[in-house]
Length: 566
Image (cartoon, rainbow, N blue to C red; front, side):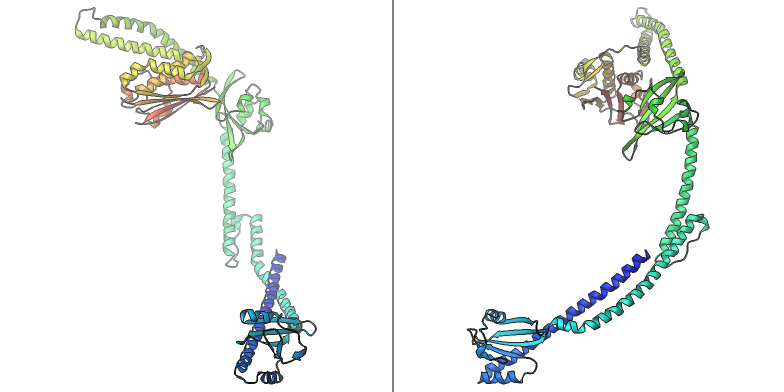
């Protein structure tokens, strides 16, 4: 760097001297040219005035040319180019001057100038011609040394001056280089000292005020970097503790399914004692019972159940992106054996209780029907209470039927008979079937459907659409609207149903697909229902490998989107 700064300063100094010399020479030459032109103009004015006032022009010009000592030459030319008078030469032997540049310019413009160099004597001849009122041309000229003659005469002094200036530039450049780089060297020593010792044991040096902000900034940055490194080290240790104490196993793979990182529980799941034993190994080889061909095309999180050593594991798999580029896959392994066992017991209990309650409730319904018909001639309120008993019994029967139906769907006991199903025809049949309810509720259904077809069970899909449309009508306003949209993009089919009803509070939307759950709003409590419809819909969609999403805003309406593979 020192050599580079030194050469830069030296080059800049020499370049400035050279430019100054050239500019001075150019100004000197221009000043000389201007002075000569002024002399020629003044001489022309004198001669022209005398010619216009004098009586014997030739005699006057001859006397004037003889007495001039500064090299002035006078030439008088007629309109044909012949020389009428010449102060320095015999006019009789002179050639015609009509073709001379200054003469031609004077004839055309009234005035003309020209400069002609003489290489043999290193002289330059300056001509100035002027057209007189009578049409003749008067020309004056001066002889001066050529430019290069002046330059050669001054060259030794110019070289001596350049040499002395160059020596001065060399000396000054060295001094400036040392002065400029001294604070930088001190700063570099300070940086090396920071790298070799603890930053808290080093104090920033005092340098020139121009560099002091830089030194202070470096010192503060060093402190910040040291603190950040310690913080990162602490966070890494905390993350290691968290990962190693998780109940779930965590595995991160790269694009080729090579294991990039995992915790100890995941290593034990893969049959290894330490994490280092399986790092960089291919996860496909360690989990051959996973459908890897299906996982290569997922674009969101999915769950896979896996049985190993009489234990049931739930693998949550999702793609990982780094700066919008696919990095690999994240596997979260959760032992759900006990959870699945409890869920199975709960489903069995629900099924058994529902089955046991069905018989006595049927009997209650029968007795209530007898009471409601008024066979027993008792008081009027007997009939009233009998009617209520019958309605409640029917409601309990409907609930039990739905619980049993849901249990069959969850257990997979409900046989699915898939067929190529056109959604538009099925939806149209359901809308026509529900026409009386729509008229009673004063709700209008608008359908926008294409020829989308899916591979699905007709009965289950009919039940799913019925439940969704029934909810859209039931929780709507009088005079409201329901919009049904069916479309596809070539790979997936979309069934969207939107209503203009009361909507669902935002804090309740995550639980609407749970069994028996109903949003606790003032109007929804007044609407009869079991709270099982959306739970049944969700399981039907999942059985057909689809997804369901809900978007709702209170007092504006609800939109449910079902996405299905085609």
